[in-house]
Image 1 (tube, rainbow, N blue to C red):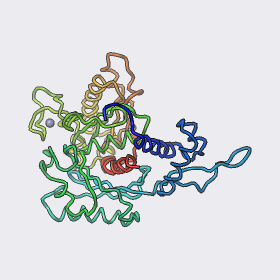
Image 2: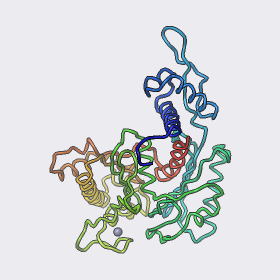
Image 3: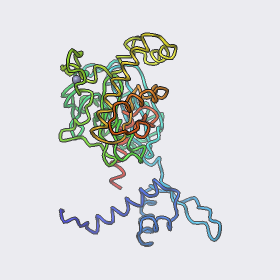
Image 4: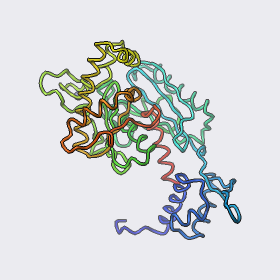
Length: 378
Ligand SMILES: [Zn+2]
C-alpha cells in the first residue's frame, strides 16, 4: 500500500463495484450502456454481469425497447436482495424502520415510550419491536444485514458504546447492553450523524452540507463529499452546544449556560402545548398570541444558528428532525431572517431547505450504514 497503485485483484473488485453502482443508479441499462459509461472492455463487463447475476444481485429478465434492431437485455439491481433495520430511541419515543437496498421504507413503527435503559422491560420491548417489524416485512434471517440503533448521544467510532449521553444519562452504555434482546448484528449510532447520513445518501446531489436536527435536543452533522465528517473524536457538528446567549442564558442539560439547545429545542414551542408539537402549530395558525411570540423568538434564534453555519462552512444547510415536517409554511420567513444577517449577499433560498427524506431520518440512517457496508463488500 502507499504506492497508489491497485493490485489486479483490487482493480477487479473496483470494476465489479462500479458496474453494480452504475446499474443501481442508472438502471435499467444495457451492456453497451455500461461499456460506454464506464469505459470498460466488453469482456470485463460481461464477466462481471455474470458474476453479479450468479450472486442474485441483478436481474436480466427484461428487455430495453430499441427503435430498430434487436432489443437489448436490460440490467437492473434487485432491491430486495438484502434488508436492514434501524431503531431510534429518544426521550419519549421508539421508532423502528426496515429498509431495502434502495433505502425505501418497507415497514415502520413509532410509539410513545419513556427512554429507560435501566429497565429490562424497555430493552425487551425494543427487541420485540425489531422482531415484529422483521416478521411483518418478511425479512429472513439470512437477508438481514444488521440492526442500527440511533441514540441521542455521542458514540464511539466503532459503534460499540456511548461516549456522551448526558441528555438522558446513559454515558458509557454499551451496544451489548442496549441491544440485549436484539439477536442480530447491531451497532450504535449518534442520531444526528445517522440523520445526516441518510439525507446525503438519499439525495446524491448533496455533496457538501450542514445538517441541523431540530427535535427535543439540537444536533448537527457535517457532510463533506457526501460523507459524514465526524472530526477527530466523533463529536463535530454539535451546534446545540454553541453559546448563543453569553449572559443570563438558561442552563443546558450539558451543564453550561446559554447553549443553542436551550433556545432551539422543540420544548421551547411544545412546552406551551403540553408536549404536543402539532397542537402548537395549530394554535400558531390560529394566530394565538403566545404561540406567535414563541415562534418569532424561535425563528430568530434558529436563523442565527443557520447563519453561523453558513458563514463557517459555505455549504447547503438542511433542516430536519421532528420540527422539519412543520417548517414548510414558514421557510420564507426563516430565509428572510437568515438573509438579513448575511454580509455576502448569499440568498438562503439557494442553500437552505428542509430534508426531503420522508421522516424517520435517525432510524433509517442507522439502517443505511449496513446497506452501504454491504455495497462496499460486493
Ligand atoms: Zn449545552
